Image (tube, rainbow, N blue to C red; front, top):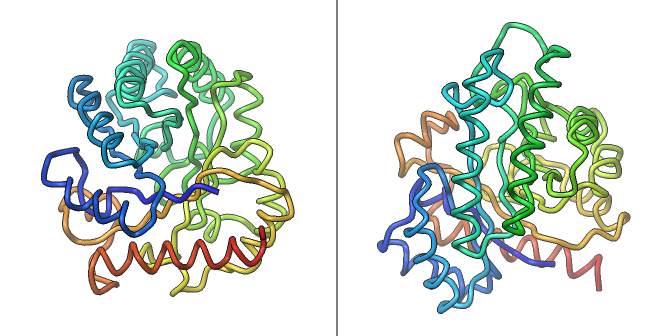
Amino acid sequence: MKYGINLLLWTDSMHDGLIPVVETLKDMGYDGVEMPLFNPNKELYADWGKKLDAIGLERTAVTIRGAEDNPISPDASVRTAAVDAMKKTIDCCHAAGVKLLAGPTHSALGEFSGCGPTADEIKWGAETMRQAAEYAATADVTIVVEYLNRFENYFLTSVAQTVSFLGEVDHPNVRMMYDTFHANIEEKNLSDAIDAAMPWTKLVHISENDRSTPGQGHVAWNETFDAIKKTNWDGWMVVEAFGLALPAIVAATKIWRKMYSTEDQLARDALAFMKTNVDKRWK
């Protein structure tokens, strides 16, 4: 198993002020970090690839799509913009040595139509994602699709929908991630959902029901880790937690109160929580 943490706990962009943070995460015992990749800058991410190599940290990345580059838009020019945005993001991944690009890249975050996905939207989304996947294959990057809960999107809100969408895309460079926060809201049976997800899953987000320290809320963690172990899955477990440091992230995640002592405390406790649960099941 590899252990990572999403840097959105500290930042929504990469800058040199993060160096002490990532050095501390390395000292804690993390294998890697998940970098936010919202403003593609190939030179910046190439530089961060070198910085993280020197520190000894691997990396994944996370991105989103918005209204201006919505992959399921009825406007063909907007869908083209989605492909172009994904290509620029993939270029940054390649420059930084990122193999897994996570996030809700299937549709625009926070955009709603008033109903569920239509057949046309599924077709447009699959076509757009397939084009991005073909480009990702040339960069040795896998797009790891994240389904979200119903309050953040309407296109993919469950394991079943996501697996079906992957079948429509039908490309080896598109797989999925399993996020314990979204699953806690949307899945009727976590064990069944995990069993269906794991054959397609490249990354698991370990996220508490209140987005704070994993293990200190009410996610069914024993059921979750037991079900993952049952499938003999072995990959990236990445902590995803949010705080109040960044106004843009606060607005997007609807976090209005601080629910942990410090970011270091959360990171340290989360890593210990993951390792304890994995060690007693995988060893």
